[in-house]
Length: 410
Image (cartoon, rainbow, N blue to C red; front, top):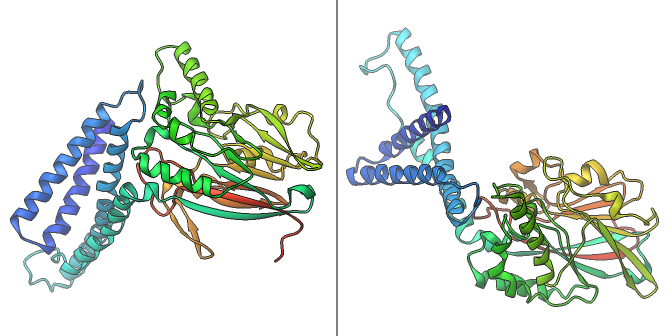
């Protein structure tokens, strides 16, 4: 009950300040009334949907819309509130000074709100509003192909020029546009890579979420050196209440079988040797291991029989695994491929200038390439989306790696 009191108090403060900003720049009654009605309906819809959330079902299209609407409505208003609140601090300070100097002829302790401040506040609020709206309508399917060339002195000679496509975090239960997904599959096929790797989270929770998309993902062409995958934290069904343990176990088995149905070889704490000419590399796949999530991954078991001298590519969904277990492991994992963070689906990326997202305060490795003493991790920004039904600045990604033998030229 207390949390609802705080929620409505928060909403009331935000709505009052947002309305004050609008009222400062226009006195047109129908605009003000329309704004109040729309705001009230939006709040009522959000509250109603949150009260209807069913932990036996988990995320669905309604929860996606609700969370998207929540961000769309309140983030711009929080910006409005912050600016208007700062103005109030200034007004109180100014009014106090004027009062004690005895120079108050206005008849009011507080100076009037300045139209310019409200205009600035509304302009600032329009930026996240338009960005979030774009992210929900266009950005979530704004697929990008990112190419990386990686150099390794000990790469087997026959793998010089070997190419790998990586996708991650499909979250098929969030999709709503088959045409866009088909387009992304075409982009994957156009890369003509030697091998394709999928680093987990095929669904949000239920295996059935993938059923409408199986035929589309089966369009991913065979790759000469195989199609391999691992599990992510969402694939274990940990985030809902199940009617029984048996139902949860069956869902997990069905999720694992989805990989077979779309032609991927699921690696469960195991490795396989990829051979090309006289050379070979070890592809290691662990189950999910996250510092704050499911820890089913067993690196020791997956690498049984491998030595430090074997060239190894590790598939591990959560990049915190690399930070806490992999990067200092004596077996020397040359390249780790992860996903999981989605870059929070929100941030700013201008190559060579800035890379920022709030998720960087949680994960040291959250998007792109990182290196530690010759060992690399690449964190894919994700193919799909989850919770917020959109992407702003952090676009859905298909990564293509080219492995080269030798030292990187500065």
